[in-house]
Figure: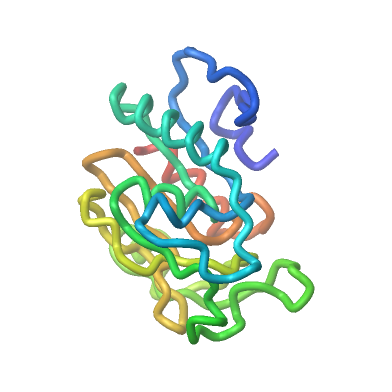
Length: 194
C-alpha cells in the first residue's frame, strides 16, 4: 500500500458513519466525478458520473480536518474535490472542452505524460517530470480560497498540483499510488513535512 510509510491507515468509505478519531492526515482518493451543482453548473455531458452522497461525506471530512488543523492530501478526484471545496471550478470533460487526450487512455487506462513543476515541487523534482493520469475532468477556475500555489501544470496548461501551507492541503491530479517513481516517493516525503 502506497501510504503505509506514513503510519497506520484506516480506510473510510462514504457509506459508513464517519469516525471521530484523531487522525493526522486525510487522503481523498480517486473515483466518480464531483457533482457540478457544487460549483454552480449543471451536468453538461452524458459521461459525467456523480456520487453526491460521497461528495457530501468528503466535504464534511474536509471541514472537520481543516477545523482541527490536520493535513489533507487529494489524489485525482480528491484534487478535484478540494478545488471545488475551496471555491474553484472544473472542466466537466477535458477533450470535449478542447484539451489534448493526454490525461486518460482510450480504454480508460492510466497514461503517462509530462508536467512542468514550480515552487516546492520544482525544488523536490526539478523542472519537469513524468506522471500517470486517468481522468477526464480537470481544474478550470483556481480555488482562490485555498490561498495556495500551483506546483505543476501539464503540457496543455492544465493545473496538475497545488499546495496550501495555510491549510496544510496538497492536491495532485495524477495517481502517485499507482506509479512507482521518484516523484511518487517524493510526495510521501513531502507529506511527512506538512
